[in-house]
Image (cartoon, rainbow, N blue to C red; front, side):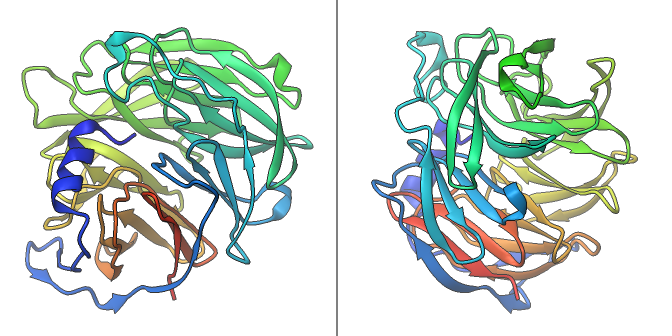
Length: 363
């Protein structure tokens, strides 16, 4: 979720055309070896400020979902707008404690398939998650609204397909917490089945992932101690026990984005403290690569088709990083404000404020 601090910094300094300059793990700044080619822009109606972007394959069809005023849907193969899900369904919180953006939605979004049911899950501003059953990738009906029990937004989320659980964060509540939501073919059966509070999470909770090798969730804690603004963590959460079973400290990052290469269990951390990006080994907690000189990144992504991470810098540029080497292999420029993106099938999809969704080829 974009913060006011990140939004303001980008508005005053990042709206110009981004110039691709990077710092590799060695700390030596140099140009990326390749340049991303923009191959199109999708312009949904009345496109404004978006939040999270998701690439999925409902009905076996590559599809992109962007949480904006509704959930805008793009056919990833053809690069065309195919619909909007949830128009008029999303609500804001009226609680003053949520702050300027802490009560707005839609926020996090993901698609999943359980049994024969293709679904889209969306976190909303009033501490609820909306579940839509899809009749096609671009069309869905609201099947359930599940309250997570807070006052502010239900934000980013991830899915455990083994235990059929969605993990969703309430980062703006005090204290911040995550909820486990059961997943069924019939969403009317979905319910909150557990919660974990993070009383020491001084700056909220961000992106999470599920690792099929360990069978655990990993969750970014932006600041793990009120006494040290430079110290964050990646919390390890066991979905069966519904408890935190470990934590990897992360210094000098303020981790927001989190994307996993499940084959080698390396994860990209998007840093929100002006320190670029880091790659963490989820088996040990070791930081295997530090990429300085890049802009802050909010949402980051992994594309299994290429074996690369994608990091949309807040305001640009986009950086593509090899999961195996930790090196930036290509970059692309963005004109305008962006903070999220997703990739799949060798393409990158980047929402740009008041413009649309820019599409780049990774080849």
